[in-house]
Length: 75
Image (cartoon, rainbow, N blue to C red; front, top):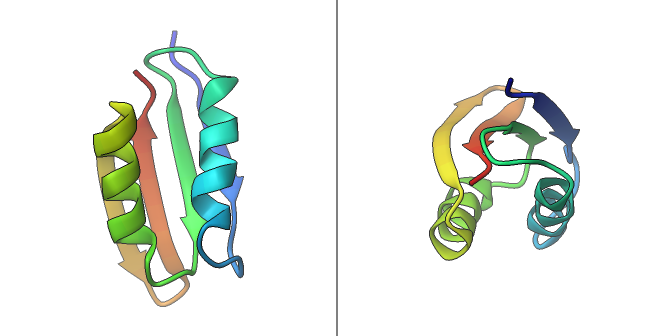
């Protein structure tokens, strides 16, 4: 069974969203999904690099007028 955890880092700038996401995934198991809510404009690129570096799977990165919603699967 996969779990989903939401991490709200709205209003926080680089590198805080990545640092907090890294802490969160360490508490998760493979297959779990981390949902990150953020407003930092660098988040799409930062999470692409984070996933490429750590091996986690970037499922989506969507933006709206409130910021970004990043979904990644823990590997």
